[in-house]
Length: 366
Image (cartoon, rainbow, N blue to C red; front, side):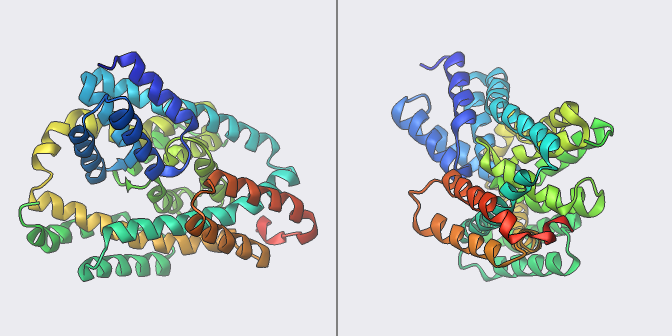
């Protein structure tokens, strides 16, 4: 039998060294908790994975909180929620402090000059993986995704209302088919915004990108396009859940208090869903109306993510070198899977550092 201390220490370590995104983290949990240690049964793990996929919130984080809850109730869920996010929070906060302090140095700009195209490649890969799992051969799902992609690209922003409409249409369309299945500001707006964002994030943490860009860059103008790209890059090269990007944004807006408010906000939704709604969701997740709503939202997310990838790519790729870095990175992460993503990012950062002065990419300053 596992103790609460053992489980907390495991997720504290996983949060500190768990690179590779949600798929890698989820696979690590299965290997460690089910196959190696026997702390969860295979059925418990599969139920938790299904629940995490069906509920809003980053997949790996939601599954981790479920593991704590299923073993030790509310105390276990809350303890794991804190432990899994603690190390990424500290690392990203330190990174945000360094970014603010040294962002005027050309070396910092050079690093992100190389890293940003890799971020685009990783988002493209996430689009492919999410679309392959979600859309499959379903023509109506493809229609939802393509319409969402077109709208996002044309209006150059993500419309929150589109997800609500897609969910309601999903009840009608998919429900039947499922059958029985650091500027000073108040931290409260940051908390509320990231709490709302956490409610609309399904599956991969990269789905946070369209929600963040719409509000943080386009509507509220909290960050520039370049700062937003840098924030996403920091979230992706840090261990733990990718949604830790929220911490970086919060720090840029309101220092440590903002980082804390944004982190608590983005993780509050999956924690609440897991602890308060697990019994209900396990009972009703096969209800055709619930399944239809979730299906409508998730297939729409694919299209929005594709459209946002185009918008992000326009800011990250501005010359032949960044285009080459993006294409080469995408080829490596698809065809040479043994090369870890952090290694690809580090190599691109080095290329950016070496090429920045000769290339003189003035478009980065726009």
